Length: 147
Image 1 (cartoon, rainbow, N blue to C red):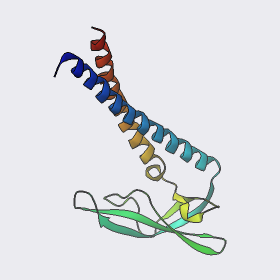
Image 2 (image 1 turned 180 degrees about the vertical axis):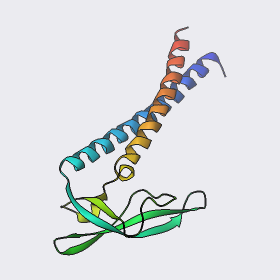
Image 3 (image 1 turned 180 degrees about the horizontal axis):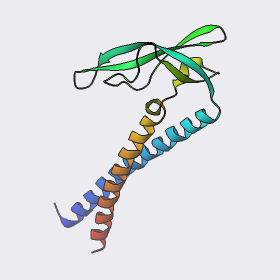
Image 4 (image 1 turned 90 degrees about the vertical axis):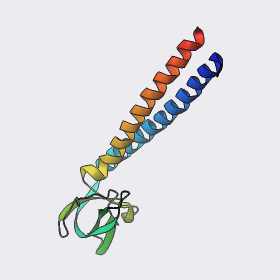
């Protein structure tokens, strides 16, 4: 590779890597904001964990997703947690707080740290890493381009 193509590669690679990082950070901000809005206007009820649904994890082991039932307008609503874990995060029969979406009760969610914040934190962490690495590579490409 010639010097200019090395520099172009650094700019392109750094730009793409940094762009992915910014996209991940934007998604983290969106999920963070969405959770804050849900918390502000929350209608909360108590629900009961009726099952810990077992499934196969990415590494072959078992992970467990909570299945929660709650009452709304004399009807039983069943929701599934968005985070699977091993060991299980809840026990069958455990009473949990549920943030209810009155417009669509099936989109209600368990009010726990993992259910509310885990996705935004992971996206924010990954976005920060990608942005920092991509920005550093892009900066090196810009610096070497000027020489």
